[in-house]
Length: 414
Image (cartoon, rainbow, N blue to C red):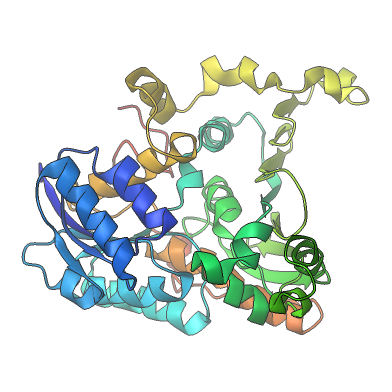
């Protein structure tokens, strides 16, 4: 077990710099030996941040290969653009370095398979930093499911419902990669915030798997309307024909009969929601009104459910996940309601102990594959598309995840 880790951070836009300042540098046991970004101002700002907080000067480079060549490097955090996640992670694994990547969909099934094959050849773990798997509600629901409160799970829903019109429309000014994706692709481009927690609820890749999907997309009208209002008709993008549909709906069928519905909704005015929803034979959880419905307990409220909104708080004491019980005692830190701190803690814990990560390469490949598969289904009018088995049959009887406080296939007390 290592007491200290030497890491590099690759990709220092808003997400990468935020992780560095709020989640990585506050950990005294983590040495940031290298920072990397294609933009000089971003990498210089990151280097200055490290020097201010630690008094050391990290390697500052535009070439991620120089980061991977740093002697004694234990791990890298990859928070670059979507298109760069996989090939940098593959290079890290080949260099014998633990890799963690930020979220996003894949561009092809080939890169998902290459990711898996690299892990199987090298034995070096790679983890997707899907912070929503460590959200308080998501972990409490996982605990409820493991304890049988909802009975046999039949259906789950989730969404990335987030008004990103400003971020996408002004991608050139903000140097944000979403713009070119929305101009050129039509798919479920950001599936893992909703799918990650659902996959853990349904034991995907450890006793269950996703079989097929169907995806459909609405027309693309939101960004045009927004740009006409914000920039006017003289702005060139105001007349751009965006390819990405405003609302994408994906339905997934699992090996044991469960269904999953995912919704991408990012270019229309709306409040933020991940719409996490788990439904079984004895009850259900609904995120948007923050409620638990139990058969035999809440049936009398079925036509006046507003009286029960926010009743999830009544279940905290009994079902709050041990990870969050301890976290609340220690004090919540970091971004995204504290989830960032936990997911990064899970990653660093695995690196220190030299064990598999709680979100592994098979999870990463399966979740990311939804993007190119949905793209194909949409292009064929919503036709069903097979989802590959990245475990090559091992999902039926895979060994349990390594013991550890952060594991997601079992509820462990510290």
